[in-house]
Amino acid sequence: TIAWKWPAEVGDVHDVKLGKHPKGAKTFWSEPGASGYSFTRKLTIPATYRIICTLHEEMTMTITVRK
Picture 1 (cartoon, rainbow, N blue to C red):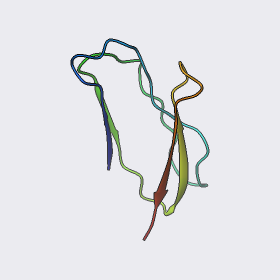
Picture 2: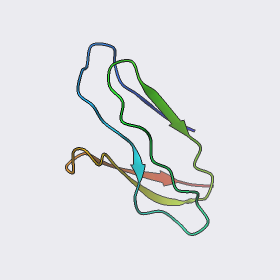
Picture 3: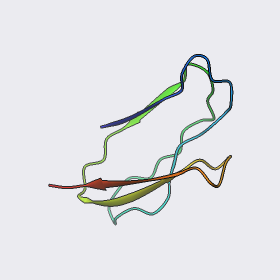
Picture 4: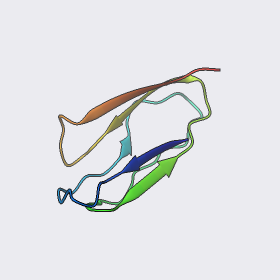
C-alpha cells in the first residue's frame, strides 16, 4: 500500500494519477489536493508503475512491486 501525504504547511495543489501500469491493474486518479490531504492505493500486481502529477508534468514517480 502506497500513501501520498501533503504536509499541513505546503499549500501547492497536486494530484496522483496512474500512468504506465501492467495489464489487469486498476487505474486511479486522485482529486487535486493541498495542505493536509492524503491519498492511498494498494498495488498488488508485480510490475513497474509510473505515477504522475497532472498539474506538474515534471513530477513523476516510478514504483516497482515485487513478489
